[in-house]
Image (cartoon, rainbow, N blue to C red; front, side):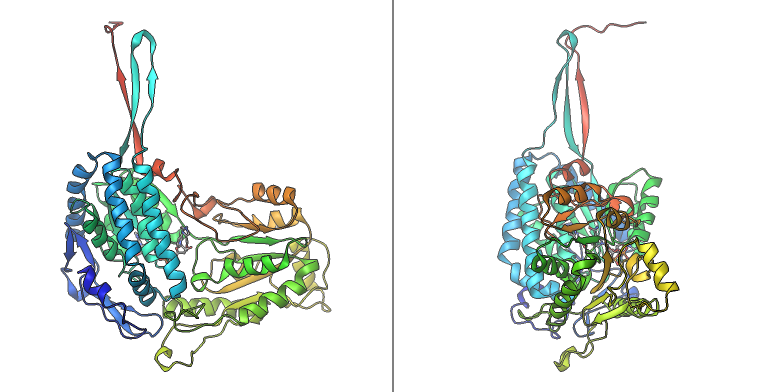
Length: 532
Ligand SMILES: NC(=O)c1ccc[n+]([C@@H]2O[C@H](COP(=O)([O-])OP(=O)(O)OC[C@H]3O[C@@H](n4cnc5c(N)ncnc54)[C@H](O)[C@@H]3O)[C@@H](O)[C@H]2O)c1
Ligand SMILES: O=CCc1c[nH]cn1
């Protein structure tokens, strides 16, 4: 079945693919949905055409998937780590072999460019290789006790884990959750976003082909209702969630009812701080990488770009010039650097943020408009021009952001064309190609302003001053700080949030802790000394 969807990929171009195969997978095979009447259309973002139908799973289907995962878990968890590793390495090999086809399908469903999608698929097989490598290393401790007694700890799996994913990295999020889960001996039931449902099932088929027991990795389709059924199911031991803060809170609340473990990978509004002693060319490139990958729909993006006032004019000139030059268009073309947003409502929401920013006094330095590519087949796509919101104002020197905004409101002679910390576009996660640029004067001031948010996913700093770089990194209330670059997230590095950006980690060795538990076994070698 994987073959039929993937085999049509080499010749496929934007606007030509229709998927009719079932998108659920459990018991080792694709499963037809029971209630076709609840089908929801899934759109190809580049054209606005219907790509397939997503039919949400109901309670019986969710239960079937979980029971099939539990049965597989009984077998998989008894295998040695090295045996699991061998199967996982085969899955990684198959993904590598089919990378172009999977990437193409991802582009058609998600709208990200083929260049980025290929990078995402490579990240995916590397994540499976990485956790395969750790599977054989899982171990406990041996602890000597008095009188020859001893104890040991066993690192054991949790059981059936649920993964719930967002639409911005559909295949990658599926592997980032399943690879550590499977390495530790768990089974996983995964629910992709209803907007990007087509590639998770490809991974399920690849795991099966590689040799996992039937049911070990299942896919159930659906939205909030199906997600809620998964979070409430008594046989589920853990929920790993990627998505927005409001949904993350609900997932946590539902999981708490049966004391399930939870990992929450949530949203962000990350600061990128650019000091005047930076290497400007790199800082500009860093700001673009921090804002425009996957059409700006990246959780850890550095969307609040703080620039030290002295270099603001040069920074803006360069960043705007390069943003205007980003080729927007058919995401399947190798020359395209920005594709469409995921959906019409998302496009409207992002454009709404730009309008609101203008109303609140920000200046649109470029972009921020709907974009209609010249290719007629893309007329119905969800494109917009990448946007920089900034300041034309370099008159105000010194003082804190609050002092500055007070000046803007009270002094007629000063321009109000500026981004301020209190604007909606600066406070809220936009999740689109919109960069907000803000001036600052001192290190102390910018640290305070950068941390003045309920989010805490990532942060970045550009400076040539090594002490300052590490001082700023230590001060950031965020799960990651990039020094002199941005959005470098290889599989070896733990990734996750501070504050309302979530808790728990994905990637890195530490994630083993989030998919396993320790059992302590105490062994008496002598007689029992009883007080009774
Ligand atoms: N921190 C990270 O690693 C990371 C990565 C990617 C995206 N994100 C965040 O995800 C958001 C965008 O993704 P989105 O729009 O798909 O998020 P979302 O919260 O709307 O949906 C995420 C997933 O949760 C499911 N869901 C919705 N309601 C649910 C409920 N009541 N119970 C259980 N599941 C439910 C959805 O169907 C989807 O699969 C952004 O905020 C972004 O920052 C975070
Ligand atoms: O949108 C979030 C992207 C990401 C990178 N690493 C883990 N998630």
